[in-house]
Length: 246
Image (cartoon, rainbow, N blue to C red; front, side, top):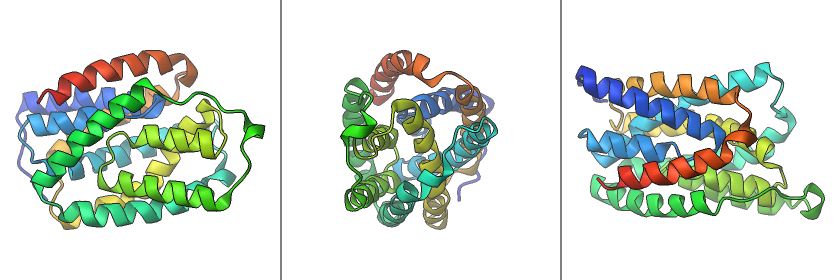
């Protein structure tokens, strides 16, 4: 674990980036596509940036889940069917990602950014609940694979989760966004342990991101999700392309 102190400007920059990421993650997904490039831009190695982002994501999702629970918006009976395979997959993905070289992590993040931008543009629309039959085997397989990606990379996993929840789970976008936050919150503590043990968490950078992301997540969870989707999608494409320039 790196405890090197950040200078004041870096801390503020990461906190503001975290605020934007927390807002985006809760409303749609893809906030890590801002935080990880920013952390790399400020000098963190790719593997450390990948691990550092996880602590902030954990704080962000606990904040959003708390807010959603206060509003009675979480259907807890649905959670285990999606969260269990995602947690198992995420642990497998994190195990390998925590040992991967920084060079390999950089290449993987590059492809992830490209894919996530495409997903940001071609985001899934609402699905008719009655049109998709319940297939437990398909649900387990899909969310296990999504979990592997989330544990290994995280960047853009929100879009994969929304796609899985709308197409496989037949949920509308509002319910999918809420359940997505719960699923990521379920697997992130396990993923964080792998990166922490591999000494790939910069504590001070993580705290800066966590401050911003928790505030952004709290405000976004109180915002009407469906009203923010178009704006978030456009903002994300522009911001990610600019950050990816690094």
